[in-house]
Amino acid sequence: MSKARFVEKQYLGREWIPISIRLVLAMFCFAVYVFTDSHDPNGDVMAVVGFAIIIISVIMGFLLHFSTCVESGSIIIDGLWTARRVKIDLNSIVKAEKGIYSGYIVNSPVYNLHKKGTIRFYTAGNEAIHLTDRDGLEYIIGSQHANELLRAIQEEMNT
Image 1: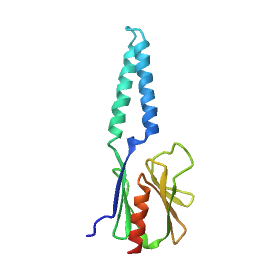
Image 2: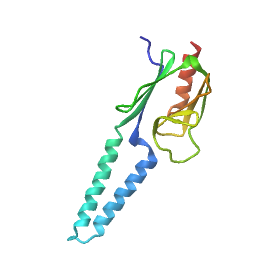
Image 3: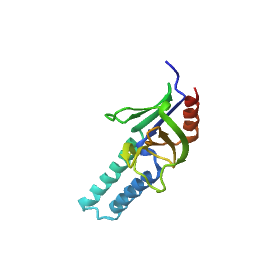
């Protein structure tokens, strides 16, 4: 069995924009709790909601969305829980290049999203690897280490 040239794990709760949104919501809940009357039960509910938001944020920081592995002439993308494993054969790839994932500031995490002739994998970051196969199908794999992923893909394609 060959050793993997590249392995990357991407987690759901580690993107800075959603973390910021959740923390602002939690601060709003705590502010409402502080400024409500001590006899009002709605204030207590807001404190519980604020703590729940923080606890969920911490748990999401450890939820694996997908892992990318380059080995044995293929890219293996293994998803969260019941998602099917995707194996991309590098022998069918005609072009591999680094680019941006999307022009938007905020992007939703996706796994194996088929849309307009592309298949997308993304959790966080701005960079992605664009792979084009012989049939014209494009794979867009978001990565926080795009340079290393591209280098590993090119090395594996050349062997």
